[in-house]
Length: 359
Ligand SMILES: *Cc1c(COP(=O)(O)O)cnc(C)c1O
Image 1 (cartoon, rainbow, N blue to C red):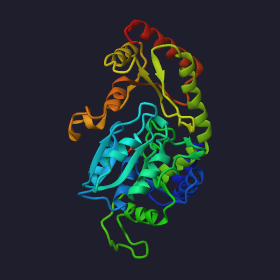
Image 2 (image 1 turned 180 degrees about the vertical axis):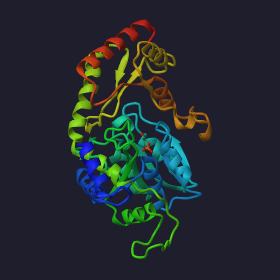
Image 3 (image 1 turned 45 degrees about the vertical axis):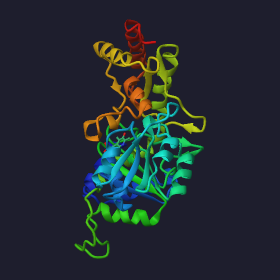
Image 4 (image 1 turned 90 degrees about the vertical axis):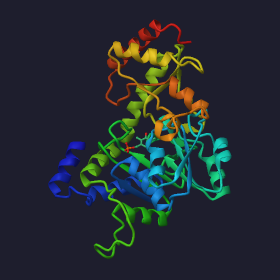
């Protein structure tokens, strides 16, 4: 289906950033996420920047961000000249801790960006209360949670505005791509303007503001339309992969991702913690053993606060620090076969057996 749509787009001559697949993508994505507007972008990082720029966030402003996330979340704030205020996550959701958010709100705070880490939606009802009380914009970085639900509502509709990534390793992909969902019409209009260099839609080459080129191409949109129509199938297969790991590896020193009762998580990656709280060596030992057995794994993100550009010290975020040291992602693709999975499970069990101190 991807090939058919892509060749159709190519043959139509609409290869750049206008065309029928872009319109269709924005309509279908809005319907799926139960919002009025979708704004397609060239990737998930610029989607975050576009949101903050359209909200007028700039120098002197602060935006509260979880310490445990992909670096793009904090970078988008930095691009605006604003300061990301990094707070800890909760051990039972791996997402931003609303109590820490409340404690971090100050006179310069303008927004909160919650991240649906490893496919699990953040606690939006609590975050909504805090943001309403203080007049803050609530942003969801839903790059990892396409297909998730909270209280029966889909990600994309859980915050004032949400961003997605369609990078190659995300649940659905077009190679490089992203989008923003919102039901705030005025904000959506501002984002569309800024996405297209700030050009007045009624007057060509008239730029009332300084914008960006953050557009998606119709070719990428064609790929994504195909992925979107197969999305439930892709999600189902990824859920089976993760379910198999969780079933087969139960009782080992791997601990599965906690999932809140009201949540249906998105099957982004098979994420586990290795060893007991505070263990600083078991994860790396397991990763090395698996590497020797030919199984590629990914460690969790390093807390942003531990990175040199953001201070280099995550001591004030102990939960993020611990999860960053213990977390591992096992291979997660929709097309892993049962026999692939069997081999991986056996090798994980073998690797765990050779690292006996993982408790
Ligand atoms: C992937 C990801 C992004 C960035 O998306 P790109 O499309 O790679 O720019 C942002 N935030 C989180 C949490 C991500 O996982």
